[in-house]
Amino acid sequence: MAQSAADKQYDAVIVGAGFAGMYMLHRLRGQGLTVRVFEAGDGVGGTWYWNRYPGARCDVESLEYQYGFSDEIQRGWTWTERYAAQPEILRYQNYVADKLDLRRDIQFETRVASATYDERDALWVVDTEKGERVKARFCVMATGCLSAARVPDFEGVGDFKGEKYHTGGWPHEGVDFTGKRVAVIGTGSSAVQSIPLIAEQAKHLTVFQRTANFTLPAGNRPLARDEIQKTKETLLEDRKRARTTNGGIICFEYNERLVEEMTAEERYRELDDRWHLGGFAFLGSFGDMMVTPDANDVAAEYARSEMRKAVKKPEIADLLLPNDHPVGVKRLCLDTHYLETFNEPHVDLVDVRSTPISKITAKGVLVGDKEYEVDAIVFATGFDAMTGAILGVDIVGKKGEKLRDKWAAGPRTYLGLGSAGFPNLFFITGPGSPSVLSNMIVSIEQHVDWISDCIGRLTAGNIRSIEARPDAEDEWVAHVNETAAATLYPQANSWYMGANIPGKPRIFMPYAGGVGVYGEKLAEVANADYAGFALGA
Ligand code: N01
Image (tube, rainbow, N blue to C red; front, side, top):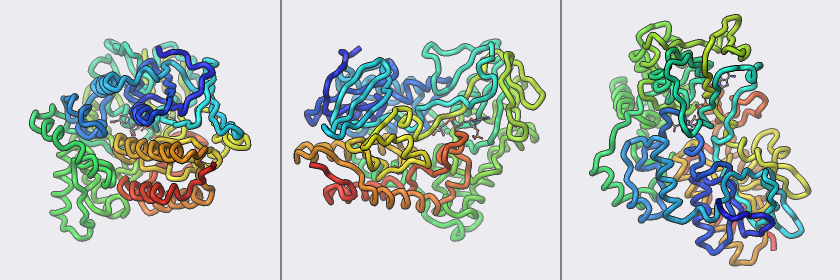
């Protein structure tokens, strides 16, 4: 472990050592700043450190899901599969940490409890749960969007006598379900990926589904030598282009034609080709797919017809086919034999929409008056997304204002980067930025580069603080809301909307304007000497 940080002062503190925190550390250190990173885990990796459940795999293609800031780093690493599995991504992150010698500035197994702004000295006072205190001019929250794992507060959850797991906090040594009766609660991406593999081991598997999800075959495969080599030659240039796109991805093109401009045959061809290509290309089938109900209906109907083909029993297919939201407005799931798993005689699906889970008992899961006895429960129940990990730290800004109070009715940021009243505090891929709607690594690099340049400007100009102006923040929040309202995204109970957490405000949290448009805005703001921010001498 790195040396104790007690009572030290740094130029910057970074919270989290996933992809965002690692690159932020590298950039700030390169600018000559002293930096301390605090990380709760005992290694780097963030999401990929915690989510070790069977089948965990990225849904962005590995050739695009890697850092693009260093030719040496990208040339020194060779991906093996189209969609990298969690162990390979974690190995990659450790390779980068070794290469850049990052660990010497990261304090592991240390969770940050609070960060309090000292107005007089313009310093963040950061306290860890271990009782250490450090001070820093800048505080960067690199806490990730999907890192506050959440088990719903089912009655009796503590009474269960068997094994309990959450996909987002999986044991490092793995879990052997051989010969066991297993319950999986939830049918989001984590469940869709893990269910086929859990079913391979379990004696019996019962899946508790509240909302059926759109899921399409990932089409994973080993990468060919020539495509790997081609990417090595072009990655840095490709990455510049990725930053101009909507989703930070260039492996497929969006079809710009509107659905009404296409014949039935053309629509089918577009959908069918993209479906069988695998991955998110399907969401680019029509120019108006995410904004026009009619266009989306055509795609959703196609998706349902394909999904139905995979399931043998019509009554199970009826349950597995989503009918209550447009396709793509909840995160599309990419699967490998998910639907087919329900054809297995030892796998059952229980609809907990019509009759919710009433409690967890000592022996299993109670739905209505039926008890499902199991040896293990897997909670694939998701995260307090986008705001959970930020607000997990007690952040106190000017005049003693708590960020938790300021965001009680929903997150308020300027550009997703900062919040008025909290000077020198930055969020990487925070709410109000494209973040989870994009290739996260592209968005992370976009933010880290912007924050580094901004800190460079402040340091060079001897400027003590930068803070979002309330009027700029109000305008940005309104713009984020208007942008979302012009799409179909708000039409689903998704974690994008905070809908999976009882009592969480229903706000569409990411910025749906796209990485390219957003990047232009970031550049415009920086070029106007950080317009919309107040710079304090
Ligand atoms: O979590 P989720 P996740 N009773 O929130 C259900 C990324 N990710 O961990 O939909 C019963 O999607 C809940 O039901 P409902 C990706 O961005 C990426 O699967 O709220 N059920 C839902 O089915 C993804 O979107 C990858 O009605 C309850 C499930 O639990 C995000 O992480 C892999 C319940 C939670 O699904 C989150 O995915 C994995 C209750 N009380 C994750 N409460 C890849 O890269 C919740 N549920 C491929």
